Length: 448
Ligand code: FES
Ligand SMILES: [Fe+2]
Image 1 (cartoon, rainbow, N blue to C red):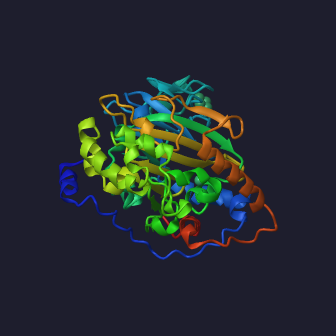
Image 2 (tube, protein in one colour):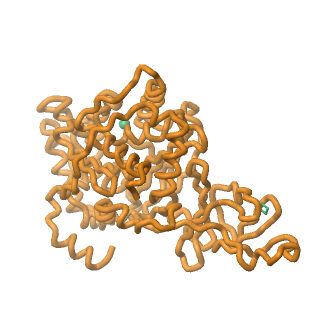
Image 3 (spheres, rainbow, N blue to C red):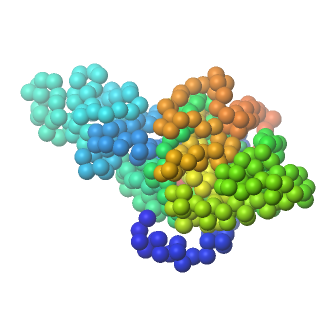
């Protein structure tokens, strides 16, 4: 964070809620089933949306040194992100320029060069072809002019962002108000603690839609009432012209709407109070006051425990769930010390399947304190957890994602039916309409 930014944060009243976004009016979208099932729609959507948007693809800390690389697949495309000698990151299509073979099938690693498995063309990590078999047999030595095809690549919040459209706007312009919100957490060096990549039998938008509304919380995740105030009337929703949306839901509190005016102090909340040296017994009869007390205590004790980024966080960022739906395909839920990244990418050919990433990154305090105990509702594995790949249903992902995916795979079945014509959406589902309106604008050529 720049000096100028630090000063701004210091002058700010952090007890105030986040400023609202521009909130353009959201037309209600019919959300007909064809959008989730048609091959034609799927292809056009890939060409106009996916090939033209900034995509959150890699993680800087996972390619820490020159020559380290990561590969991510997006539908039919495979994209190579490589750390350069000057520590910048460059991205290339993972495709050999001789006759189109995929260049590498490994997901990550460290290498001085990439050698095509077919005829052995070898590329340096900056994309330049450095070796070709029988170069004299070409009209001109290909090493003199062949390079991998490069994509736009920028770094922000510790993530590597890539855009296949080389004429695109800057990442900062694309992210709009999201940029300033995320910068406050200083998430750049947060470490990965969970990384599941799961094949799911539903269109990618069915999952992103689900993450764009909290209407399903009381029915699909009944346990969340123990730690969140789920009422839409007490939740703040925003959309921005750039195409993203945000939900801020009260956390560190049992739901007054669900339990009534005197909700119990739940076990998870008691644990969280203890972690910050507050006595749960003091809140037995006043559980609704725990959130405020926790904010004050985190503010007081946090910096000396190494959580220096709390100095930039608003009170609500200390306790409440801040969920960002980044156009087109990512939903990130920030807590004070960690972010859950849920990302959906299309299957290479089938509109009714997608790849779902459920990853968690967290701050690790310098004194080794186990801050992860404070994280609720996320399965947390080891620091630097290995990425796991599996098909939905083969093994559990964790209670909440299993609940979500069980619902979305069932919804996909209904979206296929001739018995479904259009959605009847509630006001609190506006963020879904917003996502689909922006998709339509890309597909109609009105964006980017
Ligand atoms: S296709 Fe790569 S070397 Fe021939
Ligand atoms: Fe959910």
